[in-house]
Length: 492
Image 1 (cartoon, rainbow, N blue to C red):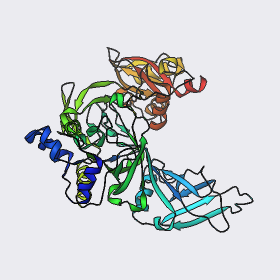
Image 2: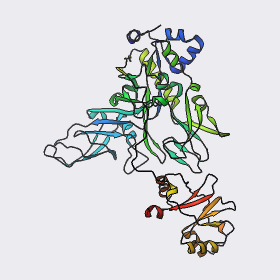
Image 3: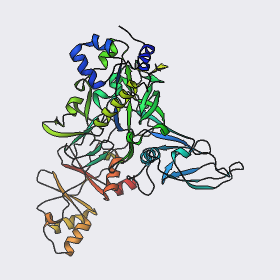
Image 4: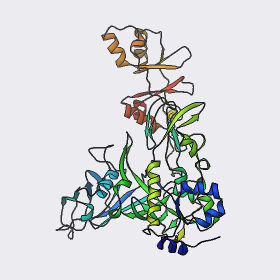
């Protein structure tokens, strides 16, 4: 049994098409079988609603009088990219406000635009004979500019990692706030509702496919950046008219201590052309696999702890090394369902028609890492021998060692050499001034540490972010094996 796009669109036009969501399709196939489902169902709608960091908008403002050729411009204090024609710009969702970083960025501007709010535009120019104006300072709304296109080079990822943190400090990432010692886990994606999970071979999703995007109509214009179907990490390059979109499906967000982004609602209708496609659209959460990944190791190839499926992820708790860990989604399943149902409603009311892709997306590409011409350096290349004292040493003993070794940092360990704290020369000076004699009263017990195989850039950032200038180097058993300070970085 096969159908064509023309046949399905004719049924949509006549109000006769049978449309269900991907979740509903699962039950239909279970109860009635693939053959019946393929014959009776015409379209399966999908949906996802989550952070789409590789997103942005192209805007055209029209010419001022006298005209200007922007060299730099800011929208509500967010520096937009020019590098286009005179009065075009691209605003990326992760670009942040110069004075309000981590609070307001390009994603919020796009939401404000679609909400019909006034946007402050300030632009400067180096001036030319045909563009003599030096500066523009004005306000505009989306209806007062010529074009406003949402253009997302990477959207609707097929699946996402489940992120955890094995270290003893809180991490702030694009996967949200990760608590220490596997204190929580986060994931993203709608599972069985996710568009690319329902058409993993891109039989119906390709260049020119009409989609639901941000509450309006959009199109797939190619494979997304980092498109990696071999590893089940497909992505889409999409485009749509912001003037037709709805702010309910476009939400600017900020991730604590990480940056800004935007949540976007995207849905794709899957025409049931044959039984094979019907089978794929009945995929269950337990059939969609991903990995639990340790974000505590800041490397390109983060350690994979184990494989997991979306049914487990949606349950609220998962098991990690014998520990029950709370897991939460950064995506909104509620909104993903709303996208799928809204798209279903459009098709049933003959407001949305399907179109076959002009070209299928590639299925054999893989994601390549960055080519690096300079060798990455690690902590082991910079560390020096640590000055070590024990918990039962007196403050005077520690002070003498600091003077003898001309060292500002002292690692405090127990009898097994395991790190228990750190003391600096300033701590000793203050202790002597305050007549303190017990070492345990002055040591810093919550110590930021590093390891031999940590990239030196990461260690340097730890010192900068925490306003410290030294890190004990420890092994996997937390024994002190060295020290690295800001002085070593400057010298080398």
